[in-house]
Each structure stands twice: as C-alpha cells, then as structure tokens.
Image (tube, rainbow, N blue to C red; front, side, top):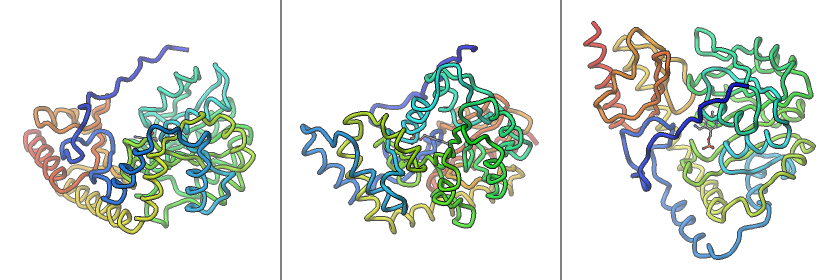
Amino acid sequence: MEPLTQVTAPPREVAPHSDDPLALSLNENPFAPLPAVHTAIVEATAAANRYPEFLPERLRRLIARHIGVLDEQVIVAAGATGVVMQVLHTVTSPGDRIVLATPTFDGYPIFAQMARLAPVVVPLDQQGRQDLTTMAEAAADARVVALCRPHNPTGTVEPAQQVQRFLNRVPSDVVVVIDEAYIEFVHPEYRLDCRALVRRHPNVVVVRTFSKAYGLAGMRTGYGICSPSSARALWAMQLPFGSTRTSLAAVAASYAAEEQLQERIRIITTERAYLRTRLRELGVSSTDSHANFVYLPPAGKPWREAFEGTGLQVRSYRDGGVRITVGGRPSTTAVLAAIGKSVAARA
Ligand code: PMP
C-alpha cells in the first residue's frame, strides 16, 4: 500500500477565541457553549484529581436513553473520530480494505493509514453524491465501507431508499459505518430511522458526535449506535478511563438544554439557506447541503484564490472546489464579500 502523507491539522492558536467569524474551515459551531453547559463543565473540573468511570457507563446510558435504544447498543469515544478508530481497531486487520468516497472527510484517509488499511476510493458523481452502486460493488472485497450522511465536503444526503438498496447489496460480514456527524442539521424528513436500521443490519454502526450541532468540538465526545452483538465487541475495546468527567457533564447539561440547542441549530440552518440564496444571486452554485457548511464545486479558477488575503479560513480542494462552514451573519457577510469580489474580477 502507498504510504499516505500524514495530513497536518491547520494551525490554530492554543486558546482560540470562541467567536472568530473568519474560522470557517473545520465545520465548528459558531456559538460558544450555553452558560448552563459551560457551568457544568467548570463544575466537573473541581473533581479533576479523581479518575472518571473505568468504562463510561453513565455517558452510555445518558445517550442511549436520549436516542431511545438499549444501553447495550451504544459505545462512546473521543469524538466521531474515536468511534471510527474503535470500530477499525475492533473489526479490521492490517491490509484489509476500506471503501471510501473521494473526496470525503479528511479524517478517513488518516484513520485508514493508522489502522494500516488499504483504501479503495470511489469518486463522487457530478452532483457531489456518493456513488452507492460502485461503493457496494467495492465493498464485496472489503472489510469496512464508510458512508457519510450528510456527506463531507458536499453536504448532500443520499435518499433513504438508495441507502436501503446499498445496505441490501453490501455483504452482511462487511461493516458499514454510517457517519452522521451532521445529522442534527438535517430536516427530520430526510433522516434515517437509525433504530430500525441497526435492527435490520447488525453490520451497521451509526456514528455521531457532540462536536457539530451540540457545539462541543473541544470536548471530544462522540458515540456509535449498533446492534447489541456488534456493540459487545466494540465495547470490549473501550479505553479504560478514556472518557472525561467534563464530557459527561457537558452531555448531561446539553440534553437538559435541548430546546435552546435546537434554536441554535435553526439559526444555523436558516443562515445556510440565506448564504446559498445570496450565492445563487451572485451566479455561484453550491451543492444541496444539509449540514453546517456549503460546498462550491470547481468553477474556472480555484475558489481558494477568492479567499487569499481576506483572513477567512476555508477548506479548499485540489480540484478548485471549496467548503465553507456556516457561521453567524458576520461570517456570511465576509464570505459573500470575498466571493462577490472574485466573481466581479472573473467577469
Ligand atoms: N465525520 C465527519 C463526516 C466529519 O466531518 C467530522 C469532523 N469534521 C468527523 C466525523 C469527526 O468529528 P469529531 O471527531 O470531532 O466528532
């Protein structure tokens, strides 16, 4: 297998400002933690001299109750990143294949390298959608296939029927990671019924995170939902003392403040719609994003150039496309100014 170049994280300050309208490259939530969540985190640090639970039973229970599944169907880890790595460490051996769309979330090629897997990459189609037919075919010779819904970087959501057809075609001994890192930004009518899904498909692990809609990227908390039999194997790989007291406190306080968080999600999705509309008015097309970012496919000169010298941090792609996190109105205004100027210069 070709060694991949380790992708380096973009430079960030040690203590970044919670409110930086120009930081639009990592799909973070623009809102600082709610006061109640912040207080819960700070209070939890008072017992930082003590270990947390040996295994994160309480956090697991909290999440399971919230989702409506059995405790025995949930695993928790350091972000969706930790969950995916836990899956790979549990079910793969070095040299196994993992099927990925390309481009996809930057983490996946790194995870594949860390688990010494051979990535099989399947290009997105013209609309920025994952090619589920080809991915299912490739899965026949693989150990794991990762499907992001919404996809990163395009934000697109494969229709439920197509996902079902895909799952019916993937061999039952191949593990399917359905990455729902951005699911809370998706309108309920487009969501999958994850409980029914893992009941029907014991080879599926649905992966979620508190990093995005819950605005807790710095807390590193994610979870996986799957059948009890799969969860048993995955739970056996829980890192001892691996989940912090502050994570537990932050999740409990976030669930208690669900309504306020839903309001923040509504603000972000409304801003996404506004940004897409204004881009369209500038003659700039973006993919049908259901997440907290928009993606501009390549159009002539690389979009990267539009942001040079503006201070805006966005994620640009080799083919000239760019992914921009949806922030507050000051972020949107800065993005539209940069793109407007670039469009005018291109005309
Ligand atoms: N999956 C996808 C699709 C993502 O975009 C991200 C973060 N950008 C992650 C997983 C990882 O999220 P985290 O580890 O912060 O939970």
